[in-house]
Image 1 (cartoon, helix red, strand yellow):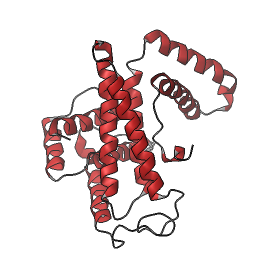
Image 2: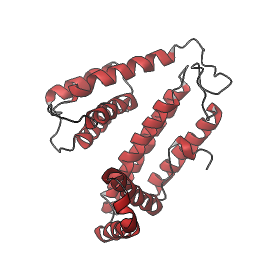
Image 3: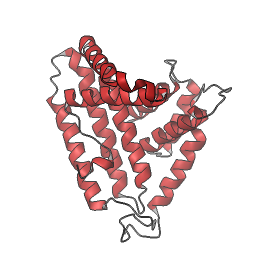
Image 4: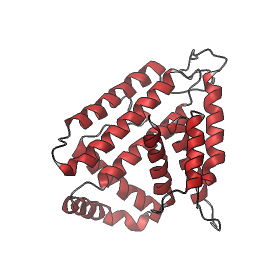
Length: 246
């Protein structure tokens, strides 16, 4: 991935989680540049950003505003250290009887099955991107979103191949980040009338359950419904490992 794409992916994810359209600063740019020069994988940076904001969102009092990317630096650095350690694990790349590479932890995922699954999803995303007609200017952003998701997943697969130890919890987090970013990009491309119809249907279906649900549960269920309609519209594959055997 070239520098521009690396920078853009990090900037957009940070802006998305911060909830503000203010662009990152020149100092943030320098930090991104240092990560790029040190070859910190993109998915490690994106995971660090999301972990930082997930922790921030759980705070009862948010006195400190998130104004720059340095707020996420500690989490990114911790993730990069773990990443480097996973490349030189004592297991020499062999997995244990439970399928978790060098951790001794039980996992329901067999490494070979995970690789095949991710390869299949990667190929689907690439095919979807290739099928988009660029002659229609409205489809350019859709094609770009699909291609970016495919590229990020491809990098994740490459890193997985070179790991001596694999954390499937971290891998699941990385896959979720890719899927959320793709859905958000495509959400902005859907026709207004069609999106309004989905949202109306979702509210209607959830109307009788709303009083028994917490606001957070309602919001998440509603977003999941709209997300499902988006996946149907664009024939998107699920990336989560929990769909591996579906």
